[in-house]
View 1 (cartoon, helix red, strand yellow):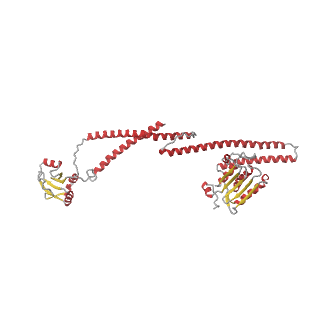
View 2 (cartoon, rainbow, N blue to C red):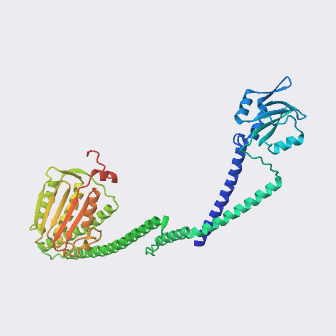
Length: 475
């Protein structure tokens, strides 16, 4: 894998070098052609040579005599130049602004000498043609140089080819050098990233201590965060699976006991010699055990629906003070808790919550009963109702920090109770119902000092965001 990445990296780098070289070469010749296509953009620019070659546009013939236009005279004056027109014998026909030292007749050799070299007064000469005449334009020493280049086409082609090969070779060598220099800083982190992802794929969340620097540092940091998150969720899943297995075993055991009672008492009822009182007592046992099994199964179905958010909610406006007071009274009316010390207080007499009355009653009831069942008989409980929350406080045993982390988990059944009929789902069901209303549950407990559970009211905005607010009559 590492060599494959390295080879692909070098191939990509070499192809990039070739492409850049070709593009630069093409661009160079294109710009050169474009620059020289227009005299105004040419590398020669507004040179005297260019001016002289195009000076014939300012010349005209009038009855055989050469005339210079006013524009031509202005151009000569601006350049400090002079003009001399010669016939085919080299003799002067007319002149403009000619210095005194300039000859009036030129032999062919003198013309060549004047064109190639300056005269004694450091004047440069330029030659042009017009009709049957020749003309010289001279000017004092200019900041220009005249170069003559002889080009052989085949030699140019050969030289260009060799130059391109040398340039390509040098660029490739430079690319290889830089590639070797920087490959360890690019290929190695990429290989480590691939290895890290592969380990996450196979659920290997061990930290191998690989720490990348530079541009890859945040990538490695985020990937390690992902690995730790997956590891945490994997551990939670395994813990939940263990708890679920334990819960199934507990439920199976709990179902076997009432089923055995139902079966045994049903067989006893077949005895025709039983008294009326015994028959009635056996029937009560069967009814009680059947009701317990039904509640156990109902809890199981409810927690599954809440877990998958498949339970529809029927919202209605409920006066929260009366709702909780009714719940407390119902608990105190149960024979088991008729001697319980429960204090009720409210400062939300006119406050209404939008809740599913049946499910919310079940949630708060579970939390209140939990405070009674998991503590001694002399425990004191305070129920306080506020506009945005409900508090259930007790002076009981408290909950250990380890158990606090699991008390709202499904399948968890507390160990500090002698009550054997609990399903281990009550607290999880209560939390899920409250959260399905957009609210939350907070637990504050200290071992030996008691526990306070706070139920926070849910908001309509939270429910609407979750897409479960479906009562258009509530504003």
